[in-house]
Amino acid sequence: MLAMKAFQGAGWLVASRFLGRFIDFFTLLIMARMLTPADFGLMALALSCVAIVDMVLEIPVTQALVRLPHVDKAHLDTGFTLGALRGLAISLVLLAVAWPFAWINGDPQLVPVILALAFAPIARGLASPGLVMFIRELGFLRNFLLETGGKLAAFCLAIATLLFGGSYWALVVNFVAAPVFSCAISYLLAPYRPALSLSRLADFAGFVGWFTCAQFASAVNWQFDRILLGLGGAKETLGRYAVAADLSVMPTQSLIGPALQPIMAAFARIKAEDQRLRLAFLKAARFSMLASVPCSLGIALTSDLIVEVLLGPKWHGADWLLSLLSLSVMATPYFQTLYSLSLALGRPEVIFRLNLYDLAIRTPAVIIGFLQWGAVGMAAARLVAAAIMAAFFLRWLRNLLAIGIAEQLLNLWKIAVAGAVMTAGVLGLRGILPPWHLLAPAELALVAALGALLYGLTLLACGMWLAIGAGRLELSDRWWRSRIGADKPGDARDPET
Image (cartoon, rainbow, N blue to C red; front, top):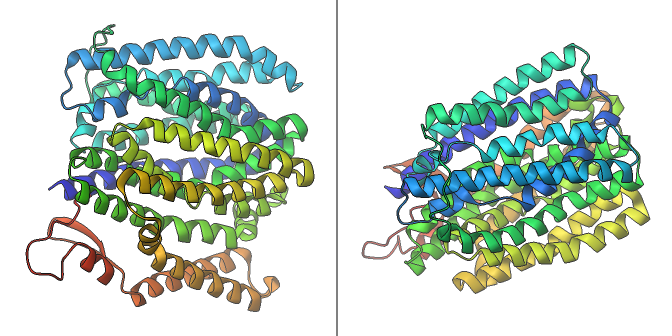
């Protein structure tokens, strides 16, 4: 069944991303203890330059191939050629901008760091396009082996660099080694003989135009604050901001994002069935927010403990940044689900327009926040912009699938109630536990356990449960059962996503 295949595929992706992010997290803890915030600031500034070039020149080879009804060797050759041309373009652009970027920021160390970081996106573009054949069938075991192998190799090389006195170059090695090793492993897992061809370019061309525009807007959205802080603030402040931002998105990148990757393929299979697609989106969106809400709230409510326990005293001041940034990414999984739906429907212009709105809202907000309150003001501005963008997500889904805003909110109200109960319980417990009575690790564990318990019990009290069985995944309650007709006579078709 499609539902079970999507669930198994999501399981492998979540496992690979979770293990990969756990390795990243463990590496970050070691680096944070042995390096300085200024080292992380230098890396963040160089990475912002590379990330913008990488995202602007992104070619959605995998996404384009997944939605095609048939894929042959000529499609794979075209995808590989586009990846190779992209790598060449990245090399030339970064060679041209590395020195001016370093000069503007007054730090010549940025030049070699930027050029070294360029190997990461180049390697990702040269990976075997044969992997898409398994993705089309929702088989993600190879992705698990690919990501895990690359992360382990990167961890070993980064720690070795650190122990031999490599300073911030350990961060560079960790970033570059993973995609380079993953690229090499991809040809073992999905054998493919490289060939240069653009014979199937027509199948990519229309898809690339809107996607490239969307990526440009997205790149500026996600890197503008770091570039602005690098220009107008100290490297130490940028380092704290960058690490807080990385920690805030770890739940989304480790669990929710990978779980949603098979959703696009599933949406593409049922895109001709309007009602089934509507129900599938609602269920996928609610599943994503079910995990996002407690993770974001949990990090925000315990940011001071997280910084103290995980990062150490030199990172004092990052707690408020972590709290605000974690709340600002709470609605990201809803956008990721909408993103997958737009690509499955062949509507990449929706992604571009949403990113353009985000750019128009976030950029002035971040500038004002920075000028008035520095890094904390920037984080607060991101939270305000995210709240406004959430309304746009609801509106655009109404246009795409004719799902009303009220129905979308009704789909999530039990999660909102559970999040509110969790917040009240955690704040109440922290209010009666003076910090000197408990060690920070013990307090963090106690507060996290109480928050998780309150969240889960509230969902159960509202009638929501998660059940796995009979070859399918159910995230259901009485409202859903009436929505899909499970309590009515006849055989209602539940969305298999």
